[in-house]
Amino acid sequence: MVDRVDLTDTGVRVSLKLPTPERVKRSAANTQELIVTRFFPMTIRRRRVEMRLVIEGDRAPAPRADSALLKAVARARQWSEDLLLGRAQSVTEIAQREAVADRYVRRLLRLAFLAPAIVEAIVAGNQPPELTAEALAKRLDLPLFWTAQAQAVGIR
Image 1: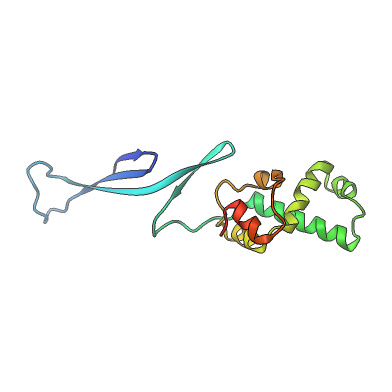
Image 2 (image 1 turned 120 degrees about the vertical axis):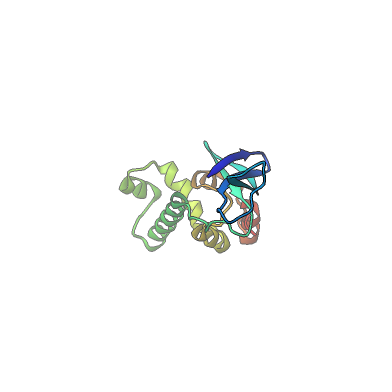
């Protein structure tokens, strides 16, 4: 049924060949099929080594939450709570318990203080495609104010 799919920098054009029923009057040029073409506007966003097609429109698929990003935020909140409640005495203790490097724990701990709007967007899967766990953990310039944080990562 798929006749052709064209990918451009502004969208995807899909052409389908549909068989015409016997009762439909046929033209002389194409007696057995009807070609239907539809254009879907989209953008291409780079996300580390992968590329993501962001298709705009009224029938966009339901967003999927980024499990790695969710896990990173959850770990950061848990580790922060462990430190605040005395279940862990230091970042080094958490790193040894989790079998990861101290540096990794320090980088992720920043995610425990994300703006609620950012966390809600991540849970709903509405974060920008380029917002990954690695990209967020490496950001040293993340503002302290929640409204400024949301703007800095592209969430309004």
